[in-house]
Length: 609
Image (tube, rainbow, N blue to C red; front, top):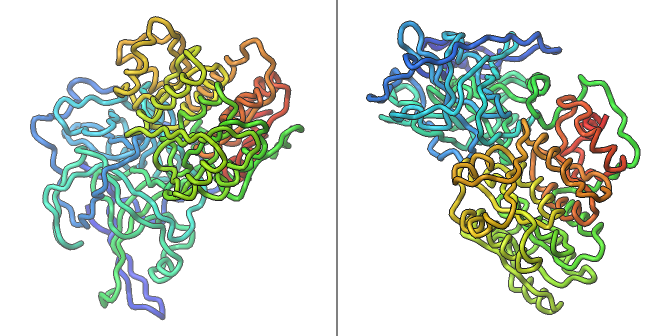
């Protein structure tokens, strides 16, 4: 690839030069220039390209690792193992010359992978194979194959529609990322020989694993200093975290949401060498969120400006605080006659996913506390609720100080601590404690513990059914979960919630009595909620965002206590009238939990009518 040179001569700085590299792996690809992948307002028609199905002859020789051509570039190629299970590796081709392109991507819907359009430029008909990792390991099998890839003109974003597969899904956020926002930039790469400078050669192969690096959005001063166009596509800067094969790789924010897709990398420097900047040019989801939503991808943070305004129906109340913790405190205040206070962290979803099942056997409320060494103020306040009998700490990430323990003891409250070595063992302990309070469960629900949405819906369902909930791990059942299920197989109905749990249970040779697997998280939750009438009248809907977990954690116990149904609300316009039938059957009234930043009014209005 030939780098492009750009010279600018402002009055106040020396000339700059810029090297821009497309990051696609093997195969000639035209460089994607930073700042040129903006989609014009109104979004041109989607270009749909059909991919050839792969044949045995398309499989690359795995006897010898496929080595990328040496490249001039930084070797800060992402040293952090990728914690995001939705990141994927894509092998496109081989073409007539036997060469294939290597790219990265991310699952954003059950059959959709988001990547960079330039990955397909030299091989527009593919075929394309999607791997979770290790695409270069002998015998590796793809999760899915591409059916079509879709893009818009003047865009370096592509959406690959695939054959069916079970896998985690990453939420997409169209929220504009402020200057200096910390991000993870992720993709596939494995260094063979590391070079020391931007000007020397590094050798690497793709497809050995998914890796990330910590980066930031450009701060305002740096953007001005190096003349990056305002609102341009450059989302990540220093270190140079990507290399060949990382094109199309996701940029994740701290919440695990995809906020950008890697397009190219650049080295910018002053000709007098006084300053230099390494950066990664990415297509921001703030530019492409509406386009993705129009294709069925759930996207958080769409402004809705391009959608017709819908009035919220009457009889909707919103409960929201200044942050997730304050919201959970307000939910606790709205929950009368509580005897059990459940404490969980709002920093990560893992420990709290199974906690809501306790609401089926004890009148409870769940409050978030994020501090590692003490209870936060809303949790301390909840300790004074009238009628409280016990405090249940779920997971070791909730801090309890000596003073907190003394306060609990002085109030005569029982302290129960359910802490496992991991999220699966914690869920096991919660299920066992549920059984000790309420006896044998009416059923056992199994939901994925790696990605949170299915378990959020399942927790509220378990509470309503007086059932228990345990967690699967992707397509596998952890030992802790199997140890709970095994003695119940002949006496208790097993229910799977979501595709990953269904696969995990099947992998263990267990035939579930019922499966709830929708096309996405929203349909899975709706299907589950629809089945829970159980001959009783339903007291409204409790509506939460499906793109993040804290508000739904707090809302689960409240939902059960109110005799309501918990539903996940999709982005405005993506699923019009999605919840209309449930809304009517639940009495046409409900509660929205969380602020408008997490769940905008227009999301709710579009989902209900």
